[in-house]
Length: 199
Image (tube, rainbow, N blue to C red; front, side):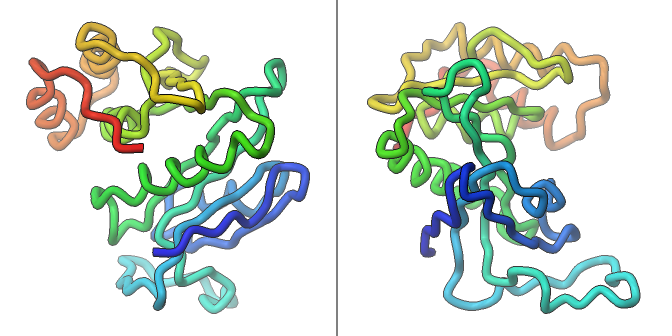
């Protein structure tokens, strides 16, 4: 995989992703954020369940992107980089590309003048993946029930079992119905401490 920084927020890069393969695909065409990607040497093989609408040319999509992230400075804390959207191609989820991409962005964020990074996650899989990149649950949630995780850029955040489990408990206690995969994942993690940070 090859890392590519398409641009910092002030450069307003855009990226056109196939919405059938990437969550949040529409968020990458609006500008206003920085964007970074992991690219494959060849187009990613993908057999979508649904056809494209008439007149939409599949050649307009970036077909070699494995994972993408959009980011910008926090409005009130400009030294904090907010990772807004992290998305991995549907055919490649669960293979570690999300954490790898985030790790690459964090490596470059210090040179961009940032001191810390923050992200809000809406599912236990993303929560786990971000812990692998040195983030820790802050105890806060956004107004749309996403858990806020943060880390300094010079070292992984310090996180203990209790704090890690507190975040997982928020997912367990949600009123919305969990998928069977989420339930199994949360049950498996019930007695564990946080995963080791790899970045």
